Length: 499
Figure 1 (cartoon, helix red, strand yellow):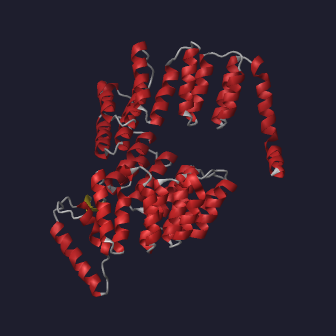
Figure 2 (cartoon, rainbow, N blue to C red):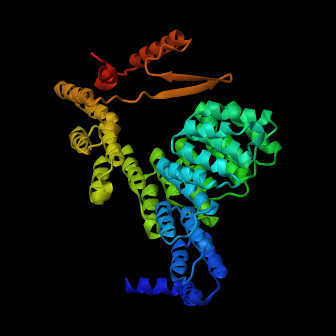
Figure 3 (cartoon, rainbow, N blue to C red):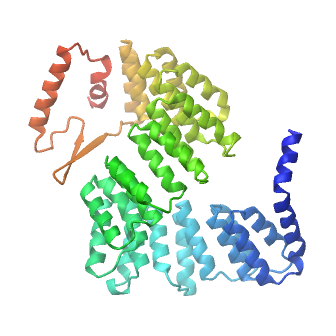
């Protein structure tokens, strides 16, 4: 341990010496220079050092406060930034447009409409106006789930008074709130009014294509990006990779990834995730290795992507090796999502007991519904019914009833597999008492430019008669070759009945 500390100190000695030197001269250096030093450390992701410099200042001005507050927001320390604003007010410094911009960004990041509304009210009371204010407000309200307020702000100014940032904020707001059709309509309106979309516009609208299941619109936007020379933009390229992958066009996603010259960690992560979702685990591993060789550092999301890819493809040993490297090599502490990936990875291949023991060893870090839910699914799929009952009871006692309707159904399936119909009835009654209902799953397929949506026992589709005829025929063919439905095949119908 001592040798490791000495080695770390050796590696960091030049940096530590520089920081000590900077801190020693802060008290005698002009404020304008110290403010620039704070910005420098912040942009180098050394926000802790930025704050140390700020604390050492014997004299501060409004720029000093705004600089450190903005630094905190840009580095994801939104709550800390809010506390600094309170301290800034106590010391009677004026909150100006720069402070307000940071506050609105923090409110957006936190999805906190209360902070956002308070900031908006402050703007009105003090008559503060600044360039891009409308777009900040639209974005804040949309991310806080108040999309109607965003619409009112957007419509407040006539089309001729809107800047591109406002159009982009409204498009992004609709996309983020699942209103993809409205996002497309707003884009069309912008084009009609001769507003030229930029890279931000395309990166904001492309997720709507996958939500709508429309490859045709994605290809039109792709074509537009090529004509406007935006296709090589890293954000547009990443959004195209994501959209094509979610639309099932993995070869298109690959082509876009290859042609995107300025790749970053998000681009690589998106492509790795795309391979994983399409069961191409080995390609995901090869790309992950290529990413490391390119000198691009993986982040926490990258590890979720590659661990998921290993899970979907049954590459357990490779996945476990990567999981171990997270903390040891890359110094990234695993989170609930990473633990869930490992549990799922082991459970999918039948190593259910090993998955259970892995989570048990985590202690409090493993007390998450998602992790135990993954193990419960594995117990059901691989016939570990007794262990499944233990896991299910643990889940049902977590006090998060509104999120675990699906786990009630899984437990019922386990009881049904063993013919324990009294327990099936008990779980069914518990669901009714708690008002729980399993969310209806939906699938879609695009045929000849039209997106067709399907849910269980759907009779609204115009071709439902022909579809059920084919399904019945397939079922008969399966039974002719020895297929036997399990007890749980009709269980969802039982649970969803309302007698």
